[in-house]
Length: 216
Image (spheres, rainbow, N blue to C red):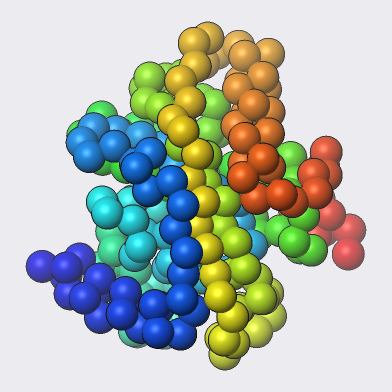
């Protein structure tokens, strides 16, 4: 009930303000598990992507989103977003374990392989969690490009601007390999990031976004 209410309220508003274009919606399966691996340009991504797709998408988000603005927390819970303590040393594995449960139950799970928002609009090296998930569960990966969301709500800004946004989804990707193999995990991750780059048109940086932010 909360999910339907959140969509009824948010989707018309998004269409009115940002006129989103969605390409490749047919790549989202009507049933069964899939991993939506997206670039990450703005905090707005976690609102727009699950709201505009035909099926619920489960994300995890840092606890701060659930303890700050009450409307934000209510909307995120309504859309099925799950809180996680990113300061906890085991947070990354806890997120992956949660994702496995979501996928085994036949749902869609959303993940940002870069691990954090891009600091400058470019696409950064992916972390191997997405590969571990697909190799562990067998769920296909659907590459996703968010377009223009950094112009609506760039990092550091709290009031959204008016600008057209888009979502571009690619064909599902399936992989074989050993989830315990570092080589297989790296190869799968790099192939997913290349697919995202092809959809988004972003320049690629062979570094982790978090390390670039830390050096700023």
